[in-house]
Image (cartoon, rainbow, N blue to C red; front, side):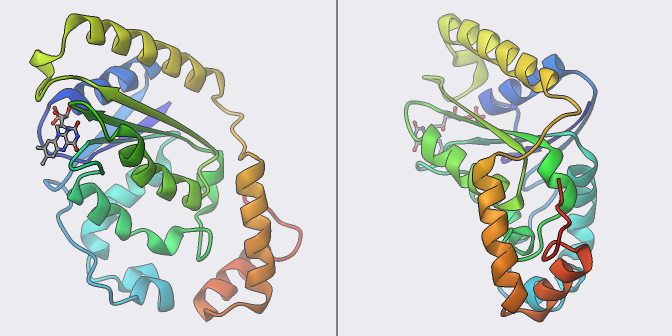
Length: 228
Ligand SMILES: Cc1cc2nc3c(=O)[nH]c(=O)nc-3n(C[C@H](O)[C@H](O)[C@H](O)COP(=O)(O)O)c2cc1C
């Protein structure tokens, strides 16, 4: 399988190690990016992506290698340490650049057949809200199957993680990898995604943004076609 990892940090700590462990257990070609090292731009709020098209984003060229890796992957891994109960600012700034891909705008059809894993680690707490920061984008991008894995590592780096917790990480990454592998080639979105997509079909028939309306019409999604 093709796996793309987006690391919400540029260093190789606990979060990095868990994401790597999982990717290796899934097996296949791994492409990875570190934030902010590989993409360090903040959305400037020009709304060009929504109104004129994503190629009008001032950061489009810099974002393209990451977008291509995401689009060509079977499995996406988004990994972030917990910083004050949320994903890192770098991860948030990165995800902001894909607002135009939310189902309320112009979702990318291949997303509906991909799997994604959101991984976060904290010293103690905040994994749920951090994973949600990333899983919200995954859901609204239309990703077919989303897993969330948060670990309280009781440490500030990987070598400080107690052995007992490392054993749990081994077990959980193995079971996650098995689930992901068993779904290879037959991922389809669940009811919640399909229901939201259907609401958007209605909205897009009348619409408020011409770029979005044209996109849905061209894809045939306001008629009988579906992206999955
Ligand atoms: C700026 C900053 C904020 C943090 N905020 C939290 C927090 O809200 N809750 C928590 O339990 N740990 C917090 N931590 C600790 C890290 O989340 C924790 O050590 C994590 O496992 C680090 O992952 P890493 O080794 O991949 O960098 C914070 C650390 C930093 C540097």
